[in-house]
Length: 457
Image (cartoon, rainbow, N blue to C red):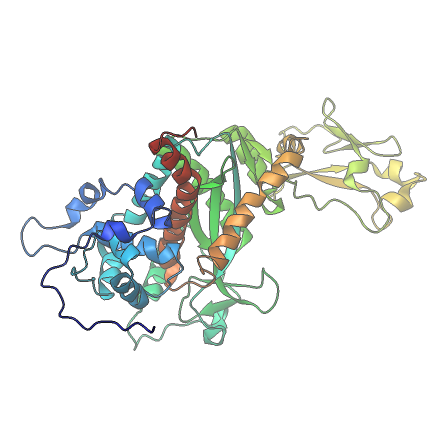
């Protein structure tokens, strides 16, 4: 027969254990097992007074943010609602059934204040990375790096040409505008006006790199360990190639300084294969670059490419296909000259006599009197990059692309919510924290459970 719920009087007291209602294989159980915020209070202690009304626990705010980024909850309004309703989220945030949820404005107050002043999110990220190291999921032998373009919270219609961008002094400065102007004032070199500037988020970069219509964006730069694809550093930068290469240098130096890790090899794509970047890796850092060399010397018009000319290290000259020499200088000067151009290149030229009577001139230099080759002063670093081991490294570099796909499709970070370079920095750090915790929980949680049950791992 049909059953009916009995509307009996509610009991006066409940015996309710929140932990009993969270599944043993829930993702947050694994994350909670490997997340240690015990040192967070000491890190932030200088920003709190010893007297007055107690504040909201900063560890609670960090845990709530981790929930939001792990499950793609992009709005802090909605995050507060979800933590209020979801038992698993309450359990992870150390909240009881009757504990109040912080107001959404608390996140902004702390983010723009003590969290940013003390680089708290960077501290939490490095604590998570240290746990990855202690659990043995980071090898440290090989790193891979890449960048992905993320749309800024700026409308295409709110952009103006860079040369016409002028601030309306009658309106108060927004935070992104103030940060942008401070960055311009502190810059060592004068910046060339960009093609377009957003009036909403002026630090964002106008780019069409992914293809399609241009938009304002930032780049998230990942440095990952190739053993398990764990993120070892992350950096926000404008969405252009030079800034992304500089971000890679910053991440490598910071990882070595803060975590004591320096890889034996670095896997990049062609965007990082310039001679200057390769020279920095080989000569200054002692890292073997597994990078496809950025070389524009190949010809498609039927004439000889630079690979057709043999380099003679002993004589500091090129040998052309016709057997003649190309030299950087052909007479001795009283004052020695380096021959290095402003672009850090040395020009090697054949003699006019050799080229004029050469039978291969139409295949070599049909439009110029003599053949010439520009050689970078960092050319020796290019030769190190063309190693056979790069074929294996090419497959390992896909782990970075997988993390970017996970970032945009699972964590739903395909468009920023915060503005300014600092806002992008905060969002990218939190997303990297969430990805590292998710990866560690999924890889190690089953092993820990088997060991607890006395089963062989």
